[in-house]
View 1: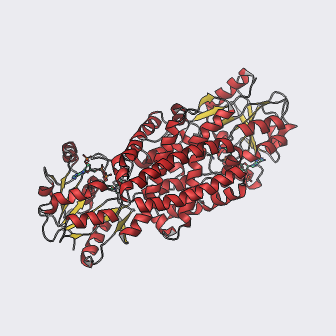
View 2: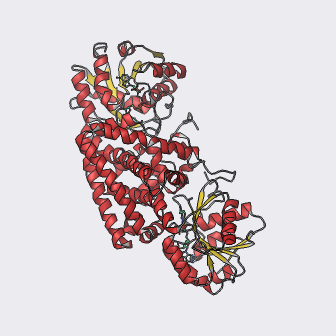
View 3: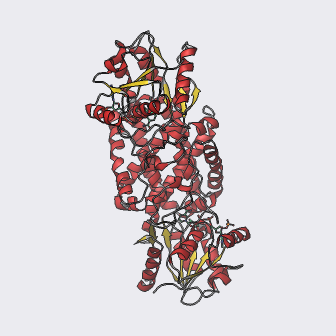
Length: 309
Length: 309
Ligand SMILES: NC(=O)c1ccc[n+]([C@@H]2O[C@H](COP(=O)([O-])OP(=O)(O)OC[C@H]3O[C@@H](n4cnc5c(N)ncnc54)[C@H](OP(=O)(O)O)[C@@H]3O)[C@@H](O)[C@H]2O)c1
Ligand SMILES: NC(=O)c1ccc[n+]([C@@H]2O[C@H](COP(=O)([O-])OP(=O)(O)OC[C@H]3O[C@@H](n4cnc5c(N)ncnc54)[C@H](OP(=O)(O)O)[C@@H]3O)[C@@H](O)[C@H]2O)c1
């Protein structure tokens, strides 16, 4: 069973990309959209992010057999309430939020009697808003689906198929495990990046101008991640607190061991860690989850004889 | 005054890139090279990283008016000893090491009576070895020169000019300040990246396979940095201990504040930090120190309709 009409609530990076991907890959499927921000709706119309764009969420979901909530994690409950009365009885409701346990609870509470199957495509960029989306965002990326206990297997299958049709690979797991996995692979990396960029900005002994000029030694990579949307990330940390704190403690523990090694001049401990970490990158590149080109194939060296692509 | 003959000791990423850059940009200058590893010398010959490649360091530096040591930080003193007797009296000795105070001391001790002016081009990739170099590595990147007290201004000027001719922008500062600046913009980012990749690899509750699959949420960026050369980085942390520990304590302090904010559900503190960190990225991109394309312009989404370049 595939979906005939998909409503997208929230037309930023994720919502816009889904709309464009459906248009590019599923010609038989129509889409409608809504965003709380009139300026976003206007821009979404210009970019044709969804087939129709509506002035209320209720209008947008009328007649849909799949609704995907693409709003910040903390706005999911509210967005669900806004559509509750307008949903058709057989409509499947899903989302793309970056944490899953709290959203699962919020959606179940806001939509009693409706079929809700949360999801999280692990794909994004540092940009947000209606100009950020592109049709290929999900290609070769994983989408995690977290079916609640007792979810209708046919509905789960239809949602899996939908994400596969957008180019994604799908894995199902429970929401609690999702939140732990993403704490490691996404939330802690963002927390660290935001923090070190903050630390570097606040030093007196090293100026901001020096930090900027000499950022090519590694720091600049962190600034990309730390340029991500503040609302989105605040909501992630408010909603995935336990898993984030658990993984943060593991990291701090390991960092403490490295600090002791540096203090003691223990080169062997350093060399051991620095050697172990290479293989995981090789696997990530081998599995198509990152670009193999050195330095991500950055094109920021002037001149013509660029580094090999 | 420009250099007529440049000898390069160590023919990996840095040494190879200098050789290729001189060939591309300074047609009137000849180069000679040496590497301790015969296999590296062989590959350097095939890639013509320098005009001639010699079997000893002493042969390589004969007749040179500039020698650049491009070996790991911990090998600088030894490399300097190996050339001490073969250096012409007017030859300038420089290097590219990632820390500067300890190298400055080691070179001064190994080469009494010779003119030594240390330098550090803030440019690199995660790759090392004789296949990693490319002529444009230094283009649009900063090179920091740390002239010792009393250094001959004409010699400093010549070295500045040399790096500018390779496409770099140059700034002079003292070695101590260099080591603090680089601790923030390079060494701590590498330490954090190595550590979080190690933490993620060692978890039981989240498998290695999950970490790899779901790495596109941020983690994969850290794995690129953590794939850097273990010897190089061990030497950096052994040789820039004080500045690294000082900056690490600042970072840990700030991370502790964020952990408390997460624990307390203090969204305002999070939002405040996450908003402040965006402007530094804008400046880095505006000053040509990073690629402006979203997600570094990665080309790892399958299909044709790629994300905008
Ligand atoms: N960015 C990523 O890399 C990424 C990756 C995977 C998953 N996600 C998840 O995807 C979701 C959306 O993220 P995004 O990056 O697409 O954010 P975005 O670009 O900021 O788009 C979200 C849009 O939703 C609107 N909105 C907020 N509350 C709403 C409501 N109640 N009803 C309708 N529209 C509402 C926002 O308007 P206002 O700006 O006016 O609030 C905004 O235009 C989040 O849950 C995030 O965790 C993000
Ligand atoms: N990689 C970066 O991003 C970067 C950026 C800026 C500065 N640097 C600095 O540049 C220097 C070189 O780094 P790299 O990335 O070019 O390293 P690399 O690719 O590993 O090259 C270093 C080469 O030097 C050789 N070597 C070691 N001891 C030697 C000796 N005594 N005499 C002659 N050759 C010797 C090594 O051979 P073996 O492998 O057999 O030891 C190796 O082939 C380091 O000091 C580093 O801190 C690196």
